[in-house]
Length: 258
Image (cartoon, rainbow, N blue to C red):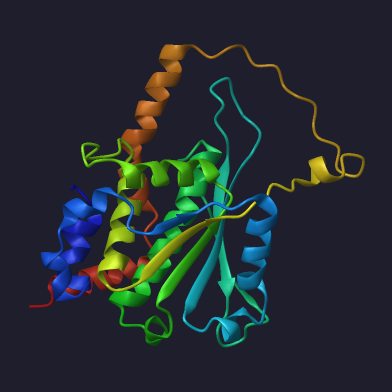
């Protein structure tokens, strides 16, 4: 698999046994997919969002993710997007740790959702490769997302017979790589659906009136197809662009080491 994590991080930043891991297994998601009914999903998620969850589930690292997009800004449906992840601070569980970031090169809210899940995996992975003391305090990573569409696709991928060797989307491939790397390091990864579509203009339209719809001419199919191809080709550049500065510095230090 062509991957910035395989080619640059794998040889230096993860345990030696990972070099021998059969990467062909990473084609399928290693984590488990959990899609409950709405009321059950909300009740389950509340257990891990409560401030007491750190004490109740000491071996669990629960991360809540979300992606957002503006109203379409042109006839191609391009949106301004951002993503965020939050989790309970183990030292001060009454507080949330928060990480939000904009995605100026991404124009679809669905991809913003994927970016958020990717970042949750990345946060856990960093604790492993850095030998972070907190890494030894969790054995299970629970990722909560409202992006059911992706979970359905990942669940279907688990059932494939192996002939589907690769997703066309490089971001998805990187997500699967991190999923497999965490599994190889002994971390159980779970993906949980949690309903969270509570836009203010839907819950209280009188107080938050939605803006009037804009009229767009129908987009040309060829233009839309070229736009999707452009997104796919730029996804690898997007991943490289949004790497944490400290991760770049660590990579440089390891590359310079004998």
